[in-house]
Image (tube, rainbow, N blue to C red; front, side, top):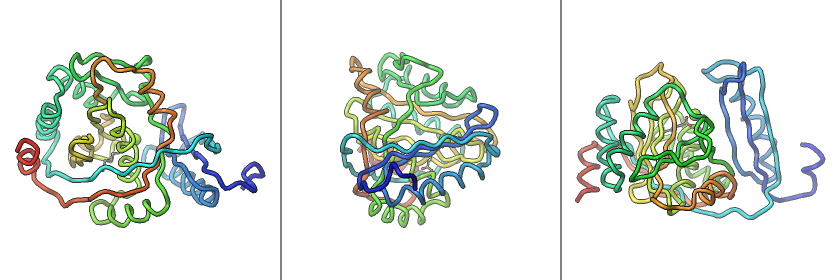
Length: 272
Ligand code: PML
Ligand code: MG
């Protein structure tokens, strides 16, 4: 470990971005106590060089001490719904978003954004009523950053996620991100499809209904994917972007992780 990290016991933000010919291959980040920085950096590098999108020609790594205390929150509860394929997932997503008060025009626009292989680098911010894009740079989107999970919560969560998925790292990181996003009261819901061609489980998340995993949300082998956050109307976009990108948030408690249920069962449970 480098000298700058010696004799301190604070938290560090560790970030990795790997690319090939300037194309994004993989990325990872977290907030860690000093002792965890070294093993985490090794894990991130080994992940970067063994990604299905190819071997990177560049890996950027940054390690910075946090300059403010993180907010500690619980992870969203997790449920997985049965799903046959992209058509049934579109209907399911539409029903859940409609129940959360998102207008049909915004639902349509969100589906257009994520079922599209011109992926945005970060997330799109969409008004829940007017379907207008609210982020200042539409190509870049908004990248959620300054997120982490405490060591204890991570052990508990890893153990539980092993029961429901073979891709524990992917689900864990997505759940940490989605929990930070949902913790902002102006963000009503998030919809996500991985842009990794081999990863076909996506999710829709909200404080109201938790993190709802949707297998077979896209066909394997496609570059479709992206994230959309649905925002309440007339909110302060600058402060939401500041929260998403800069305010450090850590998961310190793990909520329930449920069995797989059918889409009908889920819809009945939310519509009463
Ligand atoms: C991503 O590639 O960042 C998105 C991963 C989505 C994980 C969904 C899940 O399996 O729970
Ligand atoms: Mg991804």
